[in-house]
Structures are given as C-alpha cells and as structure tokens.
Amino acid sequence: MADRPLYHTGSIVSITGHHMQVKILQVTACSSCSARRLCPSSESKEKLIDVVEDHAEDYTIGQEVTIYGTTGMKRKAVMLAFGAPLLITLIWIPLAVAWLHLKDITAVGLMLLIYAAYFLLLYQRRDSMGKNFTFKIAKH
Image (cartoon, rainbow, N blue to C red; front, side):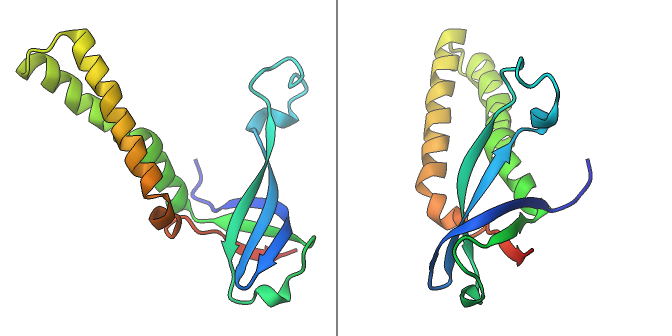
C-alpha cells in the first residue's frame, strides 16, 4: 500500500469565518465494478467534511475543491478504530481466563463492557481528537 495522502473532490456548502463545510461523495473501491448492482458492499454516501482555512474568503459556496488528509491521519484512525480494541482483547481475554479464572462467557461479557467504555471515551474526546484529524483544501 502506497504512502499517499487521502484525496476527495467535493463542493463547498457553507463558509463561516475560517470554517468551511465541504460535501463529498464517499464511494467504496468497488463502485466502478461492472457487477456492483449485484454486490451488497458497493455503496456511496454523501458526507460533510469540516475544513479550517485561513484564506476562506478566497472560496465561494458551490465551488468545487479538493480536500486532502495526511497518511498519518489514516494510520491513526485505523489504530484507534481497530488496533487498540484488538490489543485490549489480546490482553484482557488471557488475563481474565488464566489469571482471574473467569468463565469464558463472563470474560466476553466484561470485554463488551470494556469496548463500550473505550468507544464512549473516544466519543467524549471527539472534539479534541478532531484537531488531530484536519483536512486541507485546494482549489481545482
């Protein structure tokens, strides 16, 4: 997998001071496949992306732009969404079963509570984490 930025093309839907919202169409990798009508995994969604730009006055509503994020952003998002829960599981289950002598069903039930607490923590910190996940903007 190449180390390249994440690019999306979209249009500006609102500008407030230095803050802009850009509407993009997020499509799956297989959306161009000829069998996509038969495949339940090919889908597309419209999303609003927040962008902070010092020169927002140079842009207009409806203008087509490209937004991009860094490779580090992608890695961090994957680690938070998948890596950390996997690591928590790999630590918790052996600890619960071998050392704490919990039954399997009890260990798994507590694991679900740990997941709930972890994702609740991520949700509560979404505003502060949003500063680490910032998109840049470029004109066409």
